[in-house]
Length: 113
Image (cartoon, rainbow, N blue to C red; front, side):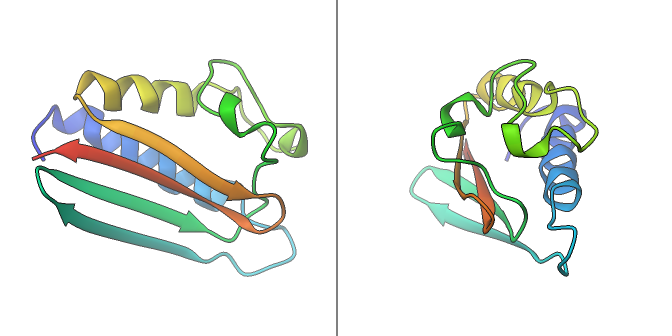
């Protein structure tokens, strides 16, 4: 992909650190990273087995200063994913998330080739 190396690095650093940070306290963290090349774009996915996000709160996950109800006891300010979204969109990319509460989350980012 093409883009500002510092900004792109920040996207992946944030997604990976969140996957670790929000791992289940009683389990062994598992993080799977995948890349798929489609026609005109490359999509990266980072999947974890962490605390997950309630489906009702999933639309708010990329909003500034929004923290999900189930992570209030974990340190954070609610700006990381909002910044990530802005960086991805600045590079004409897309970001989205799928999650199940208590089972983990999958964050996907796609960039044009």
